Image (tube, rainbow, N blue to C red; front, side, top):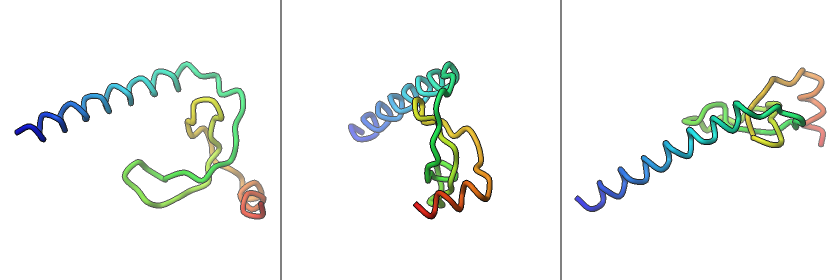
Length: 74
């Protein structure tokens, strides 16, 4: 029983943190961005290249083929 209460508490904290991150990302003006390799989805192991805000880490766009090729040359 103790473990399930601890897990429930941790899941609650996780949910609160996710909501706080969402609020920060909504308010962010995304002043600078970088190409980064990120997970395609939260539940995925597939990595993709995306434009990501340097301040709030939100995925904000898709690179062109040329930008993607330049990323892989680095």
